[in-house]
Amino acid sequence: MAAHGDKARALCGGTDLIIQMRAGVRRPEYVVDLKNIAALRQISFSMQHGLRLGAAVPAIEIHENADMRRYYPGLTEAAHLIGSLQIQSRASVGGNLCNGSPAADTIPALIAVAAKARVIGPQGERLVPVEEFCTAPGRTVLQPDEILIEFQIPTPAPHSSDAYQRFIPRNEMDIAVVGVGAAITLDPADDRCVAARIALGAVGPTPIFAREAAAALVGKRLDEASIDNAARAATAASSPIDDMRGTAEFRRHVVGVLTRRVVKLAAERARVAQSR
Amino acid sequence: MSKKVVVETTINGEATEFLCEPRQSLLEVLRDELELTGSKEGCLTGDCGACTVIINGRPTCSCLVLGVEAQGKKIDTIEGLARPEGLHVLQRKFLEHAALQCGICTPGFLMSAKALLDRNPSPTEAEIRYALAGNLCRCTGYDKIVRAVIDAANTLSGARAA
Image (cartoon, rainbow over all chains, first blue to last red; front, top):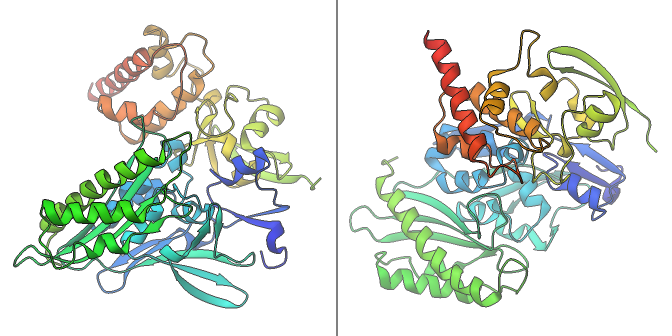
């Protein structure tokens, strides 16, 4: 990758890259298959160190992993929404992020759980918060000689959980018109929200970290009033466009609807999450 | 044009070696180099599933795999589904239920269904429909395909119980 700079492109599952090469959208002279590097293929979780999720782990292995389903249900469901089983056998979360689509399902879910992307290159290593990774549609902070190795994700706090939902006009196998991810931590004594992160997909040139929406919940009980405030703040943070998948007006409406739903779902999961 | 690469793989249980250009998809290699034309080319974007093969136990669109990625893998294609003694039970049930009309999607459906039954011998109807969601059929309306897979699963589990 270092030798060929922007003439090279990393390959993991190929479910975006091979299509883009066939369509002439990307024309790399060199394709470097990274998925046989062991560090990019591991899922390791411990309560002490949190999660390390290899960039090339295919989506289906995430869904099959008991720690992923238990501790990161929102991220797991986002990965399991991508395409068919044929696609999930190949497509990786790392590829989903590096492809840089504003509509990528796993990116809002990664932002919600405060994932950091570990990037390595000839100049050394750096950790990039996922909310800072995408810079424009199809563009990221990755330099041509850098690769994404893994995601480092903190252990969920006690009484916390996450959720991701998207709107598509059919049941399965489509690109998000809107996607919303949320992670919620509750105080079990009085059910107040002590921490929250909310992120939006497909409603701006990059995935959006909606800090104001989360701030509307912190310190409050998650009742209709506080959740409505969060939904309004999320809608205000979005900047959707009209395109073939939906109008901007419709998308703003759906941001509010999905924000309400994922906050409630993450909170329900947080209430039943065992004390860790 | 890049040099051709030697790839060693296992296809339908047989050690196989082929030469391919790095840009060629596994689907092109199967059809054009190895004359295994049962896997069909549909959309070339991973949407239709007509090119589905099983790679190391996972259903995969062979149009989105490079031929060189087959190195060291175990690949099952539609050509390996029937045994010398007869058709696979999925193939028989597709015929009995008339689960095909033009037939171009059928190899992909059969491979997706086989991958499902290999992992989950007693799937629910919802699990079958989910597993087949990556395969498109413009003729049958899907219901006969789902019935055929349910029947095949029942037949296989009945044979195991007997």
